[in-house]
Amino acid sequence: RGHNTSALASRRTRRTASRVRFLPDRAMSDPVPVSSKPAGDADEAKTSPKTSPVVINALSVKMAGAIRPYLDKAAPALVMVTTAFGLAEPYVVALWAYLQYVWEKLQPYHPEEMFPALAGFVLVFFGGNFFTLCAAVEAYRLVGFEDTKRAISKLVASYKTARAASAKDDELDEDGDGIADVKQIGKKELVVRKLGVVAKAVDPELVADALTAINTGLMAVVATLRVKFAQCVTLGVTVGSIAHNIVSTHFEPVLLELTPPDYKKWVGPTVKHGCKLAGVTLAWSLQMTISAFHSSSRGAQLFARGTLSYFVRRGYLKKTAVDETGKFFNACIVVFGLVGFWSQFWSGFSLPFPLNILLLPVRFAEWGLRVLVFMLG
Image (tube, rainbow, N blue to C red; front, side):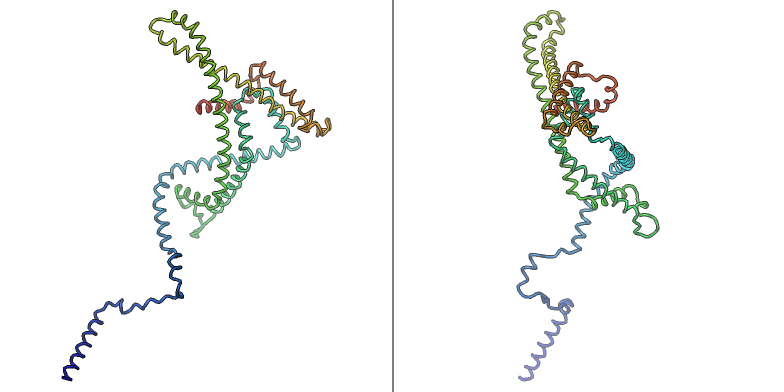
């Protein structure tokens, strides 16, 4: 019996050893996981997990792969824009430098007074020819001029920062072969590289604020022009409707008798729309007259301010002459404004020679704004 008991124990020992021998190696080699943090930090570890660098790299590669097709499609257009900008940039910089040089040379003549006085003179005697442009400038001055001036200064500063970063990037030679890296890549790669350099150097919030300020001023101009056009059209259509009632009663029957039978159907619509067109033309002329009075008043203020400041600096007048709340200054504005308005009205709002040639760029701007007004309307 004792022999049987020892044999049974021996068989149990061999069975246990065989089970242990067939366990996986990982189960035998892995140590028991023991946390290095004190008890109670398990919740904190769950709530603030650290992102693995492998995950970040994977997301970056995935996003780059998603954006790459769009960059490849836009690359030709970006190359064209970059090439055009590269060709125009030296001329623009040279023009700006020349204008600064001319401004410095004109400092003895006080151009900050001379140019507003000249602009005021043109507005006083010829402002009615540019009533759309005057309305746009006045709206921009009241709403967005100061913000735009600050925005342009910020954009210029951003441009200088981006240009300095681009110049520094042009000198990089990361592979150490003695040739700049930008000279060893194609145009598409160069465009993408420069866009990255600019994106790193420029503050996007600053650029966004500057563009928003400029856009606000432009929207004010568009709104002003649309309102003025709507006023002209409303007044013109009203006047045209009144005229159509008179014409349709007294003159349309006569026109019907004189018109061949095949064309009588055109008499009614032609008379109706012709009256409306005449009414809109009359309303536009009235708007031109009102704008001429406004430009004369505004121009008289600029002209008086510039000329009186010149006379005060030369000692011909006292300093009180440039006091904009004084009687003398306001009397000059009234006299200049009335003379200018009467001169415009008497000449039929026409430009004499050679001003019609000298002011040709301004006339082009005026015609362009008028076309824009009709398109917006």
